[in-house]
Image 1 (spheres, protein in one colour):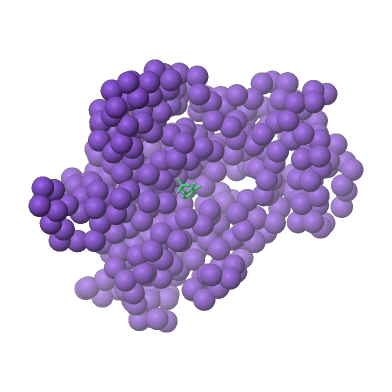
Image 2: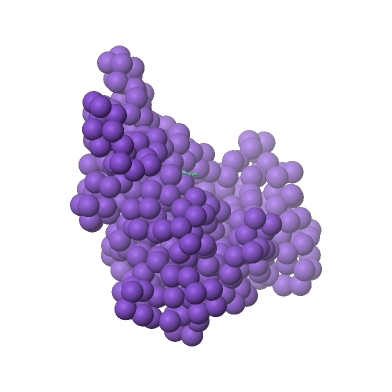
Length: 390
Ligand SMILES: *Cc1c(COP(=O)(O)O)cnc(C)c1O
C-alpha cells in the first residue's frame, strides 16, 4: 500500500485563486473594501438562491451577527443542537443569552425535531408576547438548527414549530454549503443563516463566513453591525456597539475562485461517499452515514459509527490504528451538555448525543482524494476493525 499520508480534509486551490489574489495585490485593494467582496457576496447569494449575503471574517462571527440581527437579547434563551461544533453555542453566549441544548436524532444525527416539539409543548408557555420556558421564566427567542456533516436538518418541521411558538430561526449552515433539503439550499429556510469558509469546510477563504437572509432590513443591519456600526462615517458617530467583522477583499478573492469550483468539489465529495458506502456495506461492525429523508447531502465529512460491544473504546483504538497507518481520521465533537463551561445550561432529554459521539469516526473526505487513496482508507479501516475486535 502507498506510504502517502492521507489527511482528513484538505482544501483544493486549483482555479482562479492566484489570479484574483494577484489582482488585489496589484491594485492595493486588500482590505475590507473592494470589488471582490461585492462579487463574492453576489455570486454566493445567487448560488444559494438567497436574496442577500454579507461576507464576514468567519463562521462564528456570522453566527454572532445573525443572532444579534434576529433580535436575540441578553437573558433570553435559544434552542440549539447539542451534537455540534461548539461555535453556535458560544455565539449564543456572546449575546449574553442562554443556550438550551437539544438532543440529536439517532436516525439523522441532526437536531431531534420530535424532542423540540415536545419541549415547546410541555416545558414552555406560549403567550402573546412570546414563548416562555416554564422552568426558568425566560423568553425563548430563537432556535439554531445546526446542519452537521453535510446533511440537513428537517427544516419544514423546524420552521413550522418556530412559527407556532414565535421563535426566530437562525440556521447554522457552516458545514452545509451546497446541501439541499426538499430541493432548497439549507440556509434559506430560516430568518437568517450563517456559513463558514474555514480551511476544512467544503470551500474556503482561509478564514471566512457569510450571513445569508431574504430580509433586506436584516441584511442592512448585518452590514451595519459588522462594520463598527458607523452612523456617520465621516464624523465617526456610532449609535450602537458594532464589530469589526467584515471579510477582507483579498480573502473574498479566494472565496470567489472557490465558489466557481464548488459544484465540482461537491460532486467529488458525493463520489467519495458513494465509494465508502459501497466498499463498506458488508462490514458488520459499522453503521454507515445516514441519508436523511428529503435531503441532498454533500457529505462534508463522511462519518461512520462503530457498533457492538465496547464500541466507544474500539472507536478510539481504530482512529489510532488509522493514524499509525497513514490515514487521518477523527472523532465527532464531544457533545456540549457535559463539558465544563456548559454544564450549567439546560439540556433537554439528552440520550443519543453521547453514543453518537462515542462511536463515530470521520473518514478522509478531501476533494483531492484519488481512488487509490479511498481504497487505502477502506483497507486500513478493515484491518483496524479486524485487529480491534469486540
Ligand atoms: C466550522 C463551524 C462553525 C464556525 O465556523 P468558523 O469559520 O470556524 O468560525 C460553526 N458551526 C459549525 C457547525 C461549524 O462546523
